[in-house]
Image 1 (spheres, helix red, strand yellow):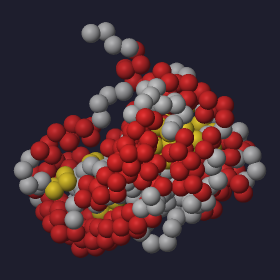
Image 2 (cartoon, helix red, strand yellow):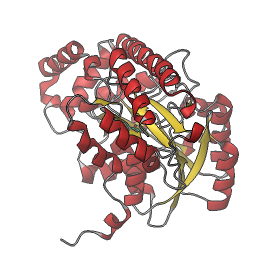
Image 3 (cartoon, protein in one colour):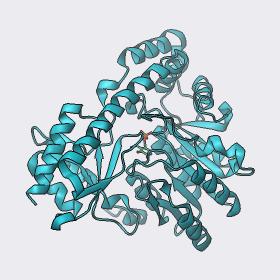
Image 4 (cartoon, protein in one colour):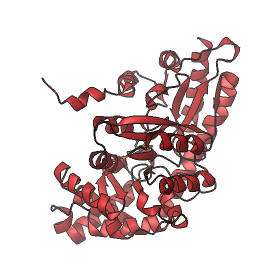
Length: 398
Ligand code: PMP
């Protein structure tokens, strides 16, 4: 088969290959990025979907507008307002997961050879999606406060990228939260270099203690000229259900119109039934309790994982305790002549019955092979403790 040239730029993710090994019986997985299905509000979604069918079956089962189902656009506007960003319904389109928002951004903005700055590390599917459109990715380093804005500025000045893609709040895979000061700096850089910033924010609602600083979108009011230079991707996947495939894209009118046009050719519209269900769910007022519940459960798991890692792996690894999201991002230190290669560590961990993903594939460039990502989302506290003990045995076996 002769495939399109654009496929030469991408390969199946190393992570998918690793997932094939997860079928082994008894394995404890810290590998996926899935939320815990035990936390799905099944009762609330049953009610929401039956209300949608009882009250608006005609619309919920019919073709719909590419921009999205109007009642959901309104609910999402209110949801964003609750997070400090004033967004009119016509300023957002509903997408099939935020993954589609990222794809539409790639489709509408990237010409072959265009430069795009991403964080190192960043979300793997974004790397692959932007590469599919021919982007040359430039990797901006991060530290415990998120992307290094001094380095970002140097890269923006040098490369004049088409846009900058950031996951400012509890990023996948890094788990870090961009500080308030740096958020302001990012918005100033957008204006100074007249460059679009894409803010991907599927994890911002999953905080464990104090809420994170406002999103770039919410802060854009404080930096004149920055709002039009922001595209914001949101999602119900991590807080409610990824199977609903409800995401959204907020952007200035011209970009939103082009993205809508491309969406028309791609899937015409996001499932109206899923959109009507999501709209009824949000209207029903269950979201605050759902959020409080998932925050609590993930906070307990994150605490347990942090404690277990310190106890079982000591100075063999270093990491920051995440303040939200679903992930720990850690680095093998090689202390006492120990292992430094996370790929090798992942193989030995599988032999001990625990899985995680090595960090290298999450870098668009300059991969740090000593890094790895652990998700605490799907294992309960007892499984987390057992899994981390197995990690300790895997390292000792090295
Ligand atoms: N962005 C990031 C950073 C993610 O981690 C994910 C899901 N893993 C997505 C976007 C896509 O999520 P969805 O399409 O389910 O909204």
